[in-house]
Length: 206
Image 1 (spheres, rainbow, N blue to C red):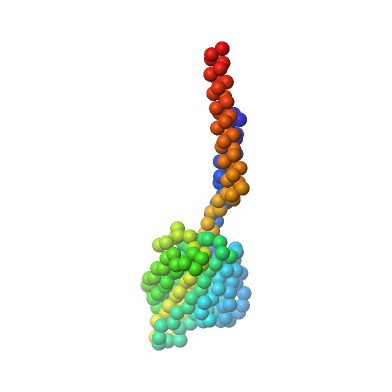
Image 2: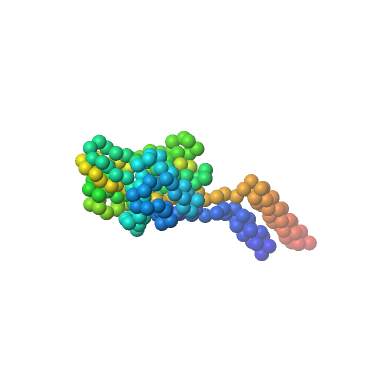
């Protein structure tokens, strides 16, 4: 029984903090509709505009609010945001995108400490004024920075935007001192079992 208790304690020590999924839904986004989007923080994640054309949308979203940009009409307009978690690693599963009347070209780029881990591009068909979910094919790759770029090629003014970015913190592992304690415990457990075997053999002989 003592061996089982010790073994259970060691197993508990080996388990780190489980991965925690978060949906960045902009629920706490401030600012009036149509005002400049200057940044947003939720559950430790920081959403930072990389282009100056992002706007706050308080009256629309999935559910409201959301962030968007306008295409004045003519040449392709793009907008980029970056997402970080204070330097901690995370994964990116997907998000919801929106356009009033056009297709939505998108690009996801994941970086680990400044080094590119993945980049993937595609085009979401016309959503006819609705939100559509776009998934990341590299959703198990750990990154420290995520860059999301949306584009629009509308021939006249058209809003495009995003909502509900799904990210997951990397599961933590035991710190170095904990690993040392666990290793010591395993040695103690092995010695205890060897001692019990010797006692059993001695009792059989005598």
